[in-house]
Amino acid sequence: MSMTTSENNICSKNTLLEETILQVEKAVQRLGLDSGYVKILKEPKRVLSVSIPIRMDNGSIEVFRGFRVQHNLARGPAKGGIRYHPEVDMDEVTALAMLMTWKCAVVNIPYGGAKGGVICNPKELSLGELERLTRRFASEISIIIGPEKDIPAPDVYTNPQVMAWIMDTFSMHQGFSVPAVVTGKPIEIGGSQGRNEATGRGVVFTIEEAASRLEINLDESTAAIQGYGNVGSVAAADLSNLGCRIVAVSDSRGGIYSEKGLDLEKLNAYKASTGSVVGYPEVRPVSNQDLLTLDCDVLVPAALENQITGENAPKIKARLVAEGANGPITHTADQILFERGITVIPDILANAGGVVVSYFEWVQDLQNFYWTKDEVNRQLRSRMVESFREVYQFKEQDGVSMREAAYMLALGRVARAMEFRGLYP
Ligand code: GLU
Image 1 (cartoon, rainbow, N blue to C red):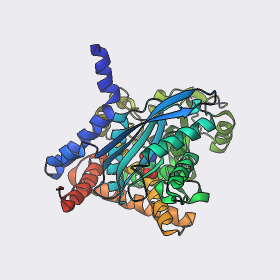
Image 2 (cartoon, rainbow, N blue to C red):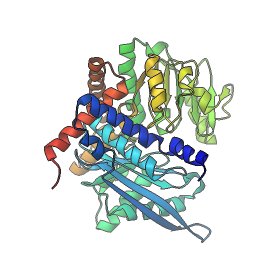
Image 3 (cartoon, protein in one colour):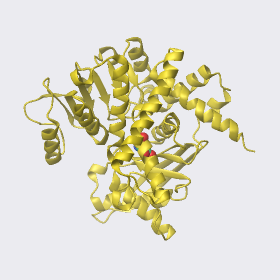
């Protein structure tokens, strides 16, 4: 392996994992916890790597690789999404599982962290192939998932239909319906009202909290959203309902910018018919990278990790950045933004709305008693606002960034649970 390749590997592949561990080390130090916690928490508790052979539509056999990683179970069963992406790998899934441990702790729901991934490009698979891939993957990981063990959910490029196939496969193995084995299901089979919109909605609840403290008037503000998927499109709609002008959005194919603001209803109809926001009339095209440095008050990176780096962080113009995606800002960029006085609402707080409503869904499934959408949204808001306040309090007390504060809150909770339980044997 040449020097360049191994350097690239360190920079591009291990970054999220290494950077998450860095945050853990810092928080453990600040809290004055036993450094042994870092040793335990930088390792995932359990990793499963599976091969997924499926019959393709053309009759050939393809073999895919999938993972499920459980990071820490001190506070309850493992919880976290499943990602289908051509570039997903074990390190990334491990980092994302770790982020789920902190996320669940920040919003104080009784779960540990997990994540799953399958290396594939779902856009190139037929519906039948996707179903066979999902069912075989579900069957392979069924040895470690279950309502009291580990509860998957949607993540990048997975959706309620994929969750329905997982729920059905697991239920077929058991011989009876087990809705609580996954969350983010269709309503018809035990899904929760408001789950689809929960992540984007939660992002906006935290933006409202931050804006009021920063004296940003949202109804006179502009916002740019990177990633117009499940998270970004809901965040855009909710921000727009608060009077905020959405000046730019993007998806994996590129972005669009309009100084006077985008008409989201028309844009949604355009995206529904063409599959992308690119090509929308009477706007200026922008790249995914250029969108980040546009003139706006609020920036929501809601696509993938490592988007705001040491290179573009000095050029960010927004006053407030809310991480809709997991890990979109590198450690270096984070420090630059902090020094520049730009407030960042970290992923483990900003995008926790999804797993909060997943928790509500699981509770409803276990009780066979279902809530109204208003009840879900009311409880989501209260959970997000309370968590924001707790993180903000740490930030004010210790003069740290919102991210460091969120890690301190999360690490404190996880460490206390570990301390009570003790080291086995
Ligand atoms: N994939 C989402 C996340 O990263 C949701 C996980 C869940 O609901 O379990 O938070």
